[in-house]
Amino acid sequence: MLEDSTEMFVARWRSAAAQVELFARTEGSPLLEARAGEIVLQLFERSGPYLSRPGPARVIINPTVESVELTEALPKPSLEVAGVSRIDAVGPVLELDGNHLLLDAGVPLVVGSSSPLPPGLSAGSWVRISSIAPVHAFVVTEDGRTGRRREQSADDAL
Image (tube, rainbow, N blue to C red; front, side, top):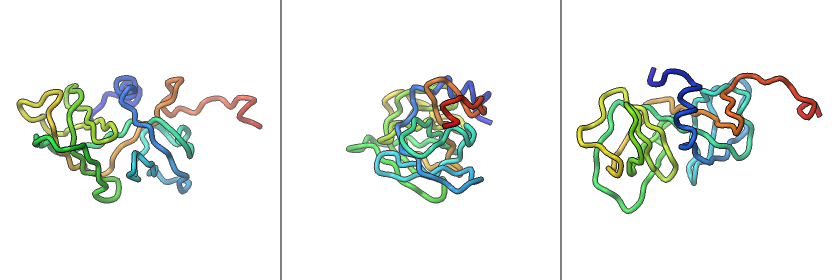
């Protein structure tokens, strides 16, 4: 496990949430489909099934990798689908925190590495990653909820 808790992870990385469009999904499926930029990603929802409704949303996209590769700067960051709930990305590192880094791949990615990050890695370094499945997703709400069911309000009942 790369984070202490869902709540702590969301609190730490809330500002790195990507603006995405969520699509309707099959009832009971843990995978969300989300358009991030021009790419449609399949993401494993970690925040519970009650926050992800079709439409615009803020989502922390959290791929896990076995290693991070330093690379030369490219003309622009890139993000590609590599399989079901897997991605490849290249871009500059915006921030480092323990075994996590914030990567600008055209959309922000909070990358967790299961091995030590490369020596010399710093903000501004360009890296290449290939995720392992599944890519995790944490839906971020303005009120700080992380998936717990809330009491139904009178407005919800309409």
